[in-house]
Image (cartoon, rainbow, N blue to C red; front, top):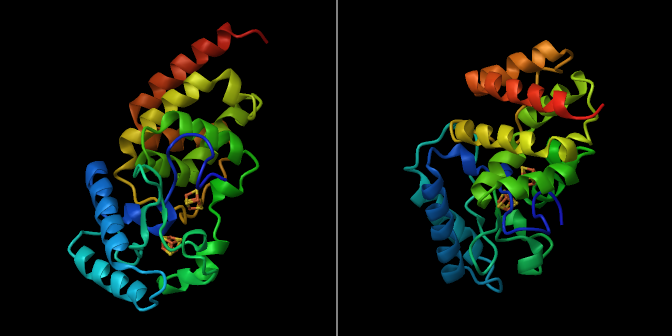
Length: 239
Ligand code: SF4
Ligand code: SF4
């Protein structure tokens, strides 16, 4: 298990399969994922190879009317619900379901890309700590995907703590409530973004000022409020 599919909780991530490139609300994402899953179960037979491309073509056609945030980003219709309770999202043609190590070759990206790709947060040394925090915060897989794919914001938060001369690993324990509140705030703006996790971070956040500038640009005045509360809590903690 990993950041993509945490062991704990009933959430998982599917951001790098292009979900958020579609201009939809959270409930529309969920109903799209449900439609895909129902159609996939009805029409794809793992023993019948041509049923995979037929499903893909059908779904691509059905989803063409959905406005995209970026026309160049692909939305893979093989992303759907992968558990019986329809809470965890994932690759419906992953080899663990199909038994065929190359089954993702029926997708636009293909097996080698689908299996080799790891996003920045997943590659991070703090991936396990981020995972447990995001599982705690997210109320569903859509929120969990927003949080997991948002690697620039996550990196900025790490830098905020390190430039504030605090131990970055320790922030997950000593400042957990403050982190939860910061990421909940972030979720209010996440739906405006097209998180794929492929986003390139052009800012190394070399100073506290540059991190604060970024966080203010992403969260607006609420970041200032959060910072005041964070500083108050910090003063009350023993050195
Ligand atoms: S964006 Fe990252 S965490 Fe999410 S599914 Fe892709 S690799 Fe996994
Ligand atoms: S085939 Fe690849 S892009 Fe499509 S859902 Fe599976 S892992 Fe994601």
